[in-house]
Structure formats: structure tokens, C-alpha cells
Length: 621
Ligand code: ADP
Ligand code: MG
View 1: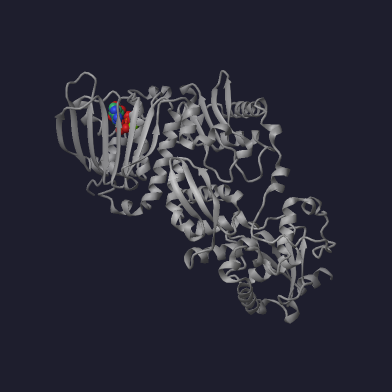
View 2: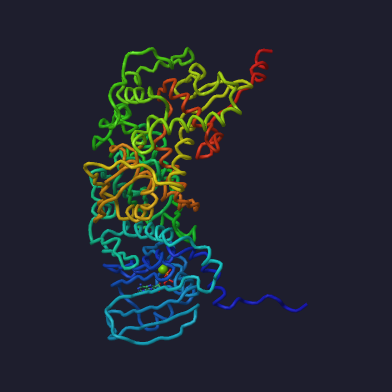
């Protein structure tokens, strides 16, 4: 049999390697920025067009290259950073594999200009699909400019796999922020499609964070400092009260390299234990300096994971350092979650007449509710909710709709719709909407009601999420929602990265009732809000929307409308623990069963369970 094994030609090997190094434009950005840092640049400019699909350019003022080095830099395993295997254990540079430029050149059109300190003239190189197409000398300043055009031009499958420009831009922004945070002493500029997104002057760690995350982040930061034989820790944690529902502002840097470490993340989270609300994540910017010989950054091709020699010690030191900072800066006693909860005003009641509150028998009282609703009954929020709920029906809450549609008309059609559909699940006429004695609230969490075959137990929060979700989805896709114009516009400030997202979703937000005025610098003027959102909630709702959009991208399932509707439903729905009077319970049940998919919440959780007479009978055997 003839020999069949052949060595792959270089350009094929490079294309294969490229698959590992370059997943998307953001990977190129990371490699080029890191090369610029390794070259000792003091100022770095990133220029991007169309989410990096058309152009990614990085210009630095670093050491530059000689004519020969310029050519060699595109060869595979060509690196100036290590010479022997032992060097791997004493790395001070970002790169060391000598793979990045070779990989990028294999799948894009690259134009490099570079000049070192001593040469009179610099070099201009053009490479297309691993082939040098031209090399010329030219006058230029010291440093290197790398322009990467038409990424994946020769791998259409990969090119088609790329997401929208906005999504790719967001990945690029993430990479840029990580690199910029790791190197505050280097100035960075970032232009996208001709517009400047970031202008970060040389600064210290704190200023860099504030430049990236906006001036309001300054007061949220608590410094962290610890020096031991194993590790030197510096940086900041975000005060517990600003912990967010979504992940995103968690940054570990080990020897100035951004890393992901679920283990160390856990150390930080455990230090925050008891200080933050459930399902929120603490924010942190932590810089760890360790002996390069004690870590192995070689375990992952894109190098965001690191293996530490002594993880357990590191965990313990990190945890106690964070605890110390939290204590030292007196963050702990400032917390008062109880009060927070009571001050939350869930709906906009401005236009509601204040005639409803009166002494009445609690129709929602039931003997199964073993925790007396003390706090709620006395609290400000429950007063508001109860009084509003006492209206004709749930929909009566939606102040402002009256003027648009006319309340009776709305209610009429709602009830008609509900009845038509509930007919199938509810037993006869006595179970229909008019009836008042057929629901009760169990443990301020479930609504219980009867059906033909037995009973149904409904999760109140999930049910309301479903109702609101379908309502918003309809608003966004079908018709323009009612909006309430604000007498005094609300001015909110956002980080540059958040602003990019906000601008993207602005049109959809307008269809659900947000109105925007001037957007200038980091501030945005809100001139109108949807009728369901109160003025005090606007900031919170928008923050949540932005972070949810950000999260979804990372999970790679992006549908703007859906996210908006989900977020609004989640943020504005009735929560577990809230007391609902019998009218509201009934209205919720009716609205729920008028939904297209009452069985599941927008987040795919079951909304209700049915318990048949048969099930109950069995228990009595
Ligand atoms: P690595 O960074 O792993 O060494 P790269 O393929 O990224 O591999 O780069 C190859 C070599 O090209 C580097 O080792 C460096 O000597 C040179 N180089 C790349 N980018 C620059 C730059 N911006 N300025 C100066 N030299 C550079
Ligand atoms: Mg490199």
C-alpha cells in the first residue's frame, strides 16, 4: 500500500489553528491589543467598522519591528517572547505562542505598518490568506498599526456564523474593557464606525474604572488591599447594596491578565454572604499579583483560564481580604433591606383619585395563611397596592389607559375574553368572573381556586409575569403603548457600553412607551415612561433591560422584543409575599387564563398545578 500521510501545507495548518484562536472579531481585537501592550505601547487606538467584520485596526506607539521581524511575525510559532520551554514558567507578556498573527493572516486581509526606534523608514506589509502580497518601505512614526480587513473572507461558513454587527461590537467592547481595565497606565481610544466610544487617558485603577463605568460608579467602590507572600491583592469591590441581578461587572486580573475563575469568584461571593439579596451578584475589580512561576496560563488556547499552584490558600486569602474591606469601610451597617422593600412603589398611581382606602373586612383572610401579613398590612406599599386593587378589576391598575381607551370598554372586552376562554377550565357559571368567593391566597404566594375536576394552585408572581409578558409583547409588536409624559424629564447616566445597548433598543423602548430626549455624553433624558412604570423605577427598569440584553448575547439567543417583554414582566410583576385582595386575585386568574400560554411563565417555569378530586380522594384511602 502506498504511503498516504502528508504534512499539511502551512496555509492549511494556519487556517486550522485560526479556528482555535479566532472565533469572532473580538478574538482578533484581544490579540492585537495584547501585542500592542507587549510592545510597550503607552497609547493604543482601536478602530472598528461594522462590528469588526469590515475592519479591525489597532495602532500603537510601541517598539515596532525591523523589516525582517515584520515578515517573520506572520509565521507560525514565530515569537520574540519565549525561546525555550522553561521560559513558559516565567512569562511577563500576554502572548507567547507566536500563533496569533499567523492565524489572523490566514483568514483575513492584513495590512501592517511598523517602524522601530532606530530605522529611518518603516515597513508596509500586505498579506492575504497567509501570502505576502507586497512589502514596501515608507515614512511613518515609531510603532505599529495592524489593520485586519474582511475577516473570514475565505471561510464563508465562519463568516455566516457571525452575529449582527451590534452583537459583535458588544463582544469587542467586552474585550476592550478587560484589556483597558488591566492596564490603566496605558491610554486607550476606541472608535466605532467613525464615532468615539471610549477615550481613556492614562490613569490609576480607580479612575480607569470610573472612566469606563461612568462617574456614578465612583461612590460605589470600596478599596481592597492586601499583601502576603503568596499574593498581592489590590482593586475594588462594589458596595453590597449595588449588587446586580445579572453578572457582568466581575473582573479578576492575574498579573494584569483578565481571567475567569469560578473558584475565586466563589471566594468573593462567600465573603459577601448575608450582605446581598438572594440572586444578586457582587461586583468586583480585583487585581492579583502572583509569582509567574506559580501559575500556568497555558491550559486554554484563548488564555482566560489560569491554573494556580495553591488555589486553596488563594481562596482563603481572597475571602478574608474582602471581608476585611467590607468591615473596614463600614459597609455592613449601612444595609437595610427591610426598609428598601417597603419603600418600593410598584405602580404609578399619580392619576388615581385618593378615595378608595377605607376600613374594610379583609376578604383575603384565610386560615391556611400561617404567617400573619403584619408587615405588609402596615406597610406603605401594601396600602398603595390594596387601595388600587380595590378597583373594579386588575386592569384598573393601569392608570392612564382610561384616557386612551376608556376604562369600561377595556374592562368589558377583557372580561369577555376571559370568560370565553375560562369557560373551558372553570366549572359552570358560579366559577366565572363575577363570583367573589372562589379564590383565596395561600401564604402570600399562591392563588387557589376551583375547577371542574378539583382545584388549581397558581403561582401569583409567575402568573402575573405571563400576563404582563403577553401584554408587552403585543404592545411592542402590534400597537404603540400608552405613555405618560413627564413634567420634569428624568436625567439618567449610563456607561459608554450601556449607552451602546440603550441606543440599540431605543426604538423598541419607544414602542412600549418610553420617550427619550437628548442623549449627551453619558447622560440620557427620559421625557416619558410607560404607564406601568413609575418615575422612581425608571432607572432600575432600564438598568435591568440593558443588563438582560447583555446577558442574552452571551447566551447567544438574541431576540430584542422578547427580552424587553420578559424583563418588564419580571421587573413589574407582583412578587411572592405581596398580599392581593380578592378582586385582584380573581382578575389575575381571569387574565392568566385569557393568555395564549397560561401554563408556563415567560421563563419557562410552571405557572399552576391542578389537583384533581381523584388525587385528593387517594389521600384519604
Ligand atoms: P506572540 O504574541 O504569541 O509572540 P503573535 O503572533 O501575536 O505571537 O506575534 C508574533 C510576534 O510579532 C511577537 O512575538 C512580536 O515580536 C511581534 N509583534 C506582533 N505585534 C507587534 C506589535 N504591535 N509591535 C511590535 N511587535 C509586534
Ligand atoms: Mg500575540
